[in-house]
Figure 1 (cartoon, rainbow, N blue to C red):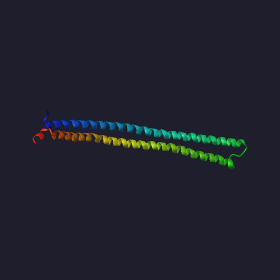
Figure 2 (figure 1 turned 120 degrees about the vertical axis):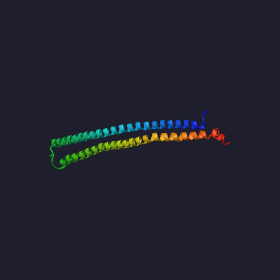
Figure 3 (figure 1 turned 180 degrees about the horizontal axis):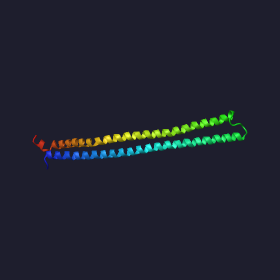
Figure 4 (figure 1 turned 90 degrees about the horizontal axis):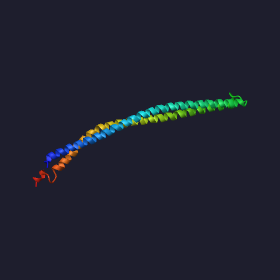
Length: 171
């Protein structure tokens, strides 16, 4: 059997190695997570741009439909023999335009809100990824320190074990 000092050195070395490997595994995992978060953030930003474009298209389509409705109203009212640009009939067409524009603005606002939410989520993911990278760099150091302390504790336990040579002389 090895003497207690040699056994202590073996324990310390093994624990340092184990701590380093655990720290490396944790670090690698965190780096991988950060990479995924960065990718997802980029995708969210692209989706936000696409959402804004879709919103612009939806607003344009809605405005075109309102114009079509106003034209149909004018044609229907004009076909019945009523003056289109005067009184109540003009108010109806004006109200249609006003309500249609309010709806168009609401539609655009809803798409902008969705895009803003995506950008905020992307920012959160970027911040979380940066935090993961920071923790990853610390994980290796902590793995070494944990291994060193664990090995020292194991060596001390071996050294002061009731059957060790150090305690044999003390009896």
